[in-house]
Image 1 (cartoon, one colour):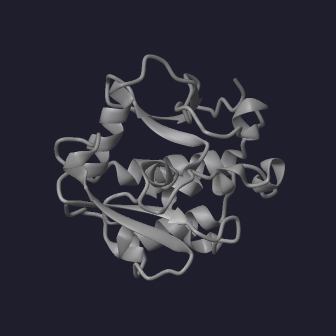
Image 2 (image 1 turned 90 degrees about the vertical axis):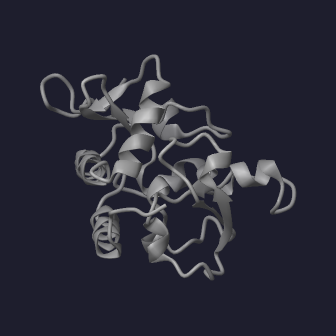
Length: 198
């Protein structure tokens, strides 16, 4: 599976997202880094442990050596999971072994975007929504409806607008979007601004 997004582009995306955060302080301080510390249990090979990790977007693995001592790696076949039909071959799942003490500048994109997720409307327009899935922990940003930093929202939107230019990533966002009955749109709203609160 070959992404059209080059390593340099991913590096630039990481740098952009390094400059923003969902809230001015470390949101992990609100919940004891629940999203980092949530245990799946079992051995590194068990399914519950595997599910607590996250997948790297196609091509994002170029930023890593695979030998990082703070990550546990798993290479799986895309065909064996609920990914778009255009996805085939290896996909990479990672789990932090040193949470919450990971090198923040190397956090994968799925960490950096949370609690926002991309959504495509039926007309193909990109929106950002609050993460719509069930979580094995309580996220104060979502549960307490905490106002998100607008710079974070806009930077995340800019990044997703670039990422979906890659057909593999577009197919993933389109597939995820098609499974949703409803969602809370954060950005852009009808008037073009960020709707940060529910």
